[in-house]
Image (cartoon, rainbow, N blue to C red):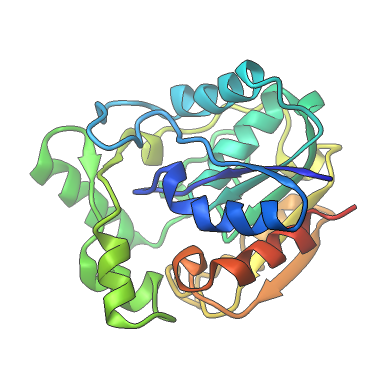
Length: 241
């Protein structure tokens, strides 16, 4: 039996990974789906990256979780990198699922194409509460392009505004991912165009891991909505010894 801790991406909470976790549990493993500080619906959106990382470190400590496979999706790659830098002794393997891989001093914005940076700056300025939102057109065409319209609309209604500072704060690491002694995997959904293919997740970001296992699976950035069972199997393939 393996313990999986699934860390969600921007605009999500742990609830959206419930179906994936259920499939992992049905295969005889444990699965946990915490919500990062700042990502609960209605929560104050002025949280920075440091507090977001600390909230998952605290979750592991409070729940006495160790020997875990720590999975991070998208923005969640920032979180699991910071957690691994803080408490590597609790982690068995890191799995980056179409996730950002930061080196010391990098932010999500540093790894985004300029149009996304401009979009999020404009959204933050318009909203004025420290949060950013993702337009439905981008969600439909680039994030959940492997699902029908009804699925895309239902999933979009589950999203909540994301703390902008967590995308612009630069991470502080003692050790860059390529130098971490922990085993690492990169899970790449091959139809993921949330980052355009001229500026891809893999290999542009995955190569920053140094030695890693590559698992590829058909699907979009939000495979958790379009085919959670297939995603769960890919996560278990990425997390196996």
